[in-house]
Image (cartoon, rainbow, N blue to C red; front, side, top):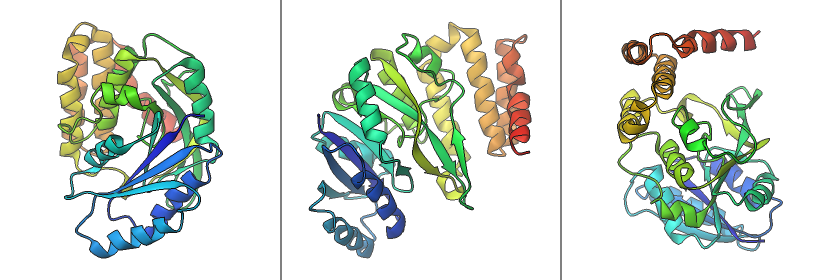
Length: 298
């Protein structure tokens, strides 16, 4: 079995939460692992040492490299640092407040080898602050090896968070890693660049616990909008050539803005979507999603 590099980036996270994430890596059924922990809060010298002490406890069970960034540069810069030091053929990222199920990497490794893919993603469980668990499967996720995943990723990020996929390290390096010009949607952008060149496939099993909280979601709507606008401009030739795809994407962004209670942007992107394609079922996307969400709560 080829080595998998597991990269955990951490920033001001309580040590007990970080330990939960690391334990979920150490307890993987896949045996050939290395762990790289990248600390993006060098100014917190006490926490820097607390993490070092924590990692020393695992020395006998897994190969560990602890890196402290010279300055706070954000999660994606820290992930790129981890990529630079990775020795595995494959790489998987874990946010410091998430948790992998024990068979995550084994399941994804078997599939990434079978399909000769660059990326294998999965469904996940969402756990709220009260501990309630909900199975989440993205609407656009589908099994099998398809040739149009790039085009479908232009609609929405159905791969999801960086905690979900297993990736072929050589492929990630070939497309340049995470783009630091984005203030959000960096994961979506990387998945797009990978899908444009390589196969990506779906493991239809929940393999990650995603801990949902207000702190987990970026509250900076300006950063979210910058990411949305950046990708719309970056892939504008694809959007302009297919008004159905463009209309869907604009409606999806509008829905995201509404969830963030940014009503001005919701109205703006909704109107943009209608201008692109006035007679489109996707113009009712927000209404349908809100209706389905209300039903699921009963």
